[in-house]
Picture 1 (cartoon, rainbow, N blue to C red):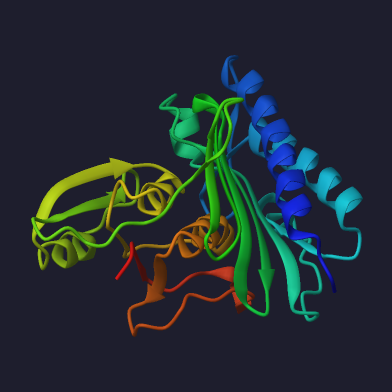
Picture 2 (tube, one colour):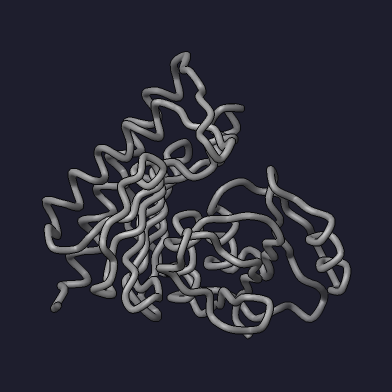
Length: 256
C-alpha cells in the first residue's frame, strides 16, 4: 500500500484536534464516570472522541483496519492480519481528565508490520500537538503557530531527567530509577511522558506497570522519529498486534 505520508499525518492531526475539541466541551461540564470490565474508568468524552476519530479515519483510509480502545472493550476487534492498522486511544489519561488535571491526550498511530511508523498526540487542555511521519520528521505545534521540529537529546553527563507515571507509579519503577544518576524527577500523566523525551526535556521513562498498545503507540512513533527508543526489558523494540494488546514492561529513552 502506497501512502502519501506528509498529507496523511496532517489529516490525522486534524482528526485528533477535532476529537480534542469535543473532549474539552465535555471537560468543562459535569459528566458521569463509568467503570469498564477491566476496572478502568470511561466517560462520555472517551466515547464521543472515539466516534469522531473512527469516522475520520474510515473516510481517510477505508482499507486500513482500526483498533480503538473503546471499540475493543465492546468486543469490536478488527482483522489486523494484513500487517497495517490504525491504533487509537481517544482519551489517554482518563483519570487525569476526571480529576481536572489537564494531562490527557488524544493518541492516533499507524502500525505497520508490528511497528508504529506515524503518530499524533494532541493535548486538548494545552492546545498542543506532537506529530511524526517517520525518522527525523517530527514536530510540535503550539496552537495555530507554525510547527517546530523537535529531537530527543543525548543523556546529560550531570544527571538524567526522569519521568514517571502520575497514576501508575510502582515500587519496581522506583527501584529501577535508583540505579541512575538523576538530576530531576517529573511526574506526568498519559502519553505526555513520551512527548517530553521526544522534545529533549527528559531522558528516561520506565514503565513497570500495566499498559495497553493504544496507550503507547503514538508516543513511540513520535519518540523514535525524534531519535529515541522504546524497548522491553530484554532490549528489544516494543512491538504491536499482540494477543490481548497488553504491553510488557518497557523503558523509553532519549538519544543514546
